[in-house]
Picture 1 (spheres, helix red, strand yellow):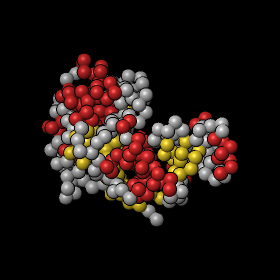
Picture 2 (tube, helix red, strand yellow):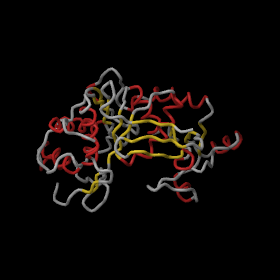
Picture 3 (cartoon, helix red, strand yellow):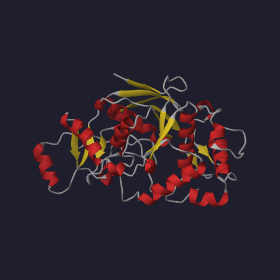
Picture 4 (cartoon, one colour):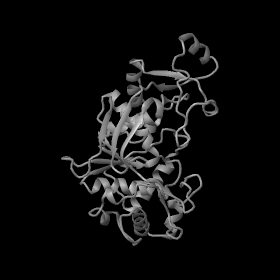
Length: 326
């Protein structure tokens, strides 16, 4: 059995609801901004709306000051959102750190169906094991703890608090991505049983993002291509929880001139530094040029790019910044 989630563009009878969903562990860098720009343009070109959700599941890594600075940067760039963040709206909370009770309700539904089990494996153990790895280096969980007996679980709990995983079937999930096209992953062999909750009680990204996008009415998810492999797992969760899945478009990643991925940790091309060198229109124009939305890096406002936006213009491969662009 295959599940198909089809991303449609400019044909939906109801204007889409897109979203920004940044994790505020540092200042925005150009890669984050490029994704936000494409999400905004895709929704606005179809007469849609944008929700701002702050993905601060790990509150220690994501202090509120970074969320506030992120809003200031988006506002300065002209990427206005219609609801969410500190602005609020009808579908709050918009900060994931405030949503534990909401996630717990969905988690319990899965637990009651016998689909959740405790996992005592450490990250180091999994990487040292002979389990298969995905192309990006992640381990496809081999199901080590899936069949533990009640007695074995009780014994292991004496030494270590477990995380919790969702059992997945041997099933292909197929969907049409708005940027990358047809994509298929096998839940068991390409993804493996995945985390729903960490050992410290923090809910995992996969569960939180599905619950939040559904309750916020999001119909179009635009995000980086590094999250393309998450989509099959999320479509499976939508189905299990009886929620309507959105359409997806995964945009190519923005790389530094030397081919490295941009990183908040390295301070690569952060808005904090770029705002000292360029106007908002210059930054938007340069990004639009890098992603094929205009033929030259001339200054532009986001609004001026709406009428000519098309996913057909966006490249399918990662975008390497020209040496002299920023």
